[in-house]
Image 1 (cartoon, one colour):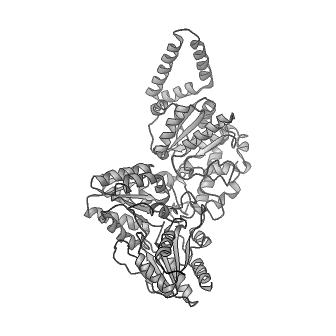
Image 2 (spheres, helix red, strand yellow):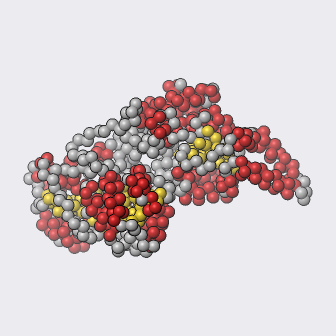
Image 3 (cartoon, helix red, strand yellow):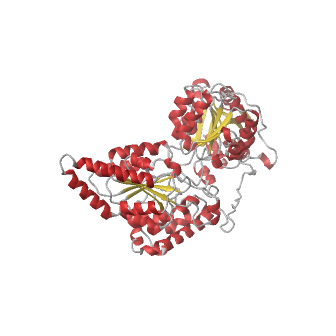
Length: 633
């Protein structure tokens, strides 16, 4: 059936009893594609029938669907004219792993962060009413995203504005509350039936015309209906916020989803539909271990085991930066009972799951609420604990005011571990952690660091929790640390002590100074060796501390070489290179040749990380070419 569906219009030609079979076809395509390309599997498998039902009942793209995060929307891509390209999912030049407004008219918003959909949908519903249009607006949000403060701010505003819109809670894990059985289902059938609501409106209209007593009777009837619903249906909170609440219903039953949507889709005012779906539905390994199959790389469908891919060029050890952090924080917490760990719904992704098992009283998962995570950490620090906030770089952006007001202004020793800093590859622009240097380095009192390998990350973490003069941020990339060994043998960059602001000379030279940040130091070393074959002798300085950085060492090196190149895996505008440039312009001799190598002023697309690094000038080969050009000039 899927072969004959090129748009939602084709879907509507199917009879209701065929939708479940179609859902199974879609699920099989998603499973086999993600097994090859990687991606968000469990949530996408669970949302198939819900997406089929939505497109069966709505008239997209005129009717608008806003996906929260969007990692569950693979079935949406398959039903909206992209099934022939679905095999390119998350690959360089292929389909995005998230809704992308540049990819399809059916993707109204480019999404990737949580708790945003209700706000966006409410804005579009308000604009629709101003323009006197009649299209429908639907926001689909997961149970984890609903816990975010922005979602509740939007619910509160939507209940106040009373705009016609539908919010669907796709509850696949948290189970806000469970259905109480046949009576609940019966009551929902009654109160969602078009005839019930039509009669209800007619009776209210007639009663309103009865002088003196009419409105009292209406209020009493509404209180009775609401009282019954609150007793039998778990939607009291949403009703109090101004929504009409329906559910929970089985979101993996396509006919039931369609039946409910048809009954409520034309209701006036804000409506809230609660659906229960099974994460990983239809794939036994994902059903048993939904966290493991939330976001996956290539795997074997039969066994569910990850397929390890070999990387060319740099030697990859088995350890990862995240793994090194996981080990070290447990070691430090065993020695210091004041250390606490905080994550925002990512214990496995950040490596804090081990800490949580060993120190449950000092572990805090605040849910998808990064602003609260930082404010909460500030409270812990002010009370004398040593909080460590482990968060992806891209998600810490959501907490910027809390970093400034609650942490930096107070001078509190909160340690921020910024995982997935730099380009993350296939997850694309919403997940690249490329802005943290520029948004952290200008904050008074903030210390910023970047390790070149896992051992150095451990040293930095130990230094950070002992530092008592303010906050510390440590940024590190996704995956394993790639250590380049010049000549294929000798290891460069011996571990040195941690002293505030100190840099490290990894290679001495006389022609060009390369100052590199974190993991990029290995690329700088490789570029230096390639340049040595062209007779260009580079000095490579590893800036362990981004802020404050080693002005003395850099200045002395530049005075000697006369040429300075900075290398960072972040945006060049306002980044580390900008800081170095400010130093050189102010304190170094005139005539110094300067080049900052970083990411351009644009959102970087998804794709293989090594390809993206080369495309944007951060591979060893491209660094070498840039320096060759500088020397020729």
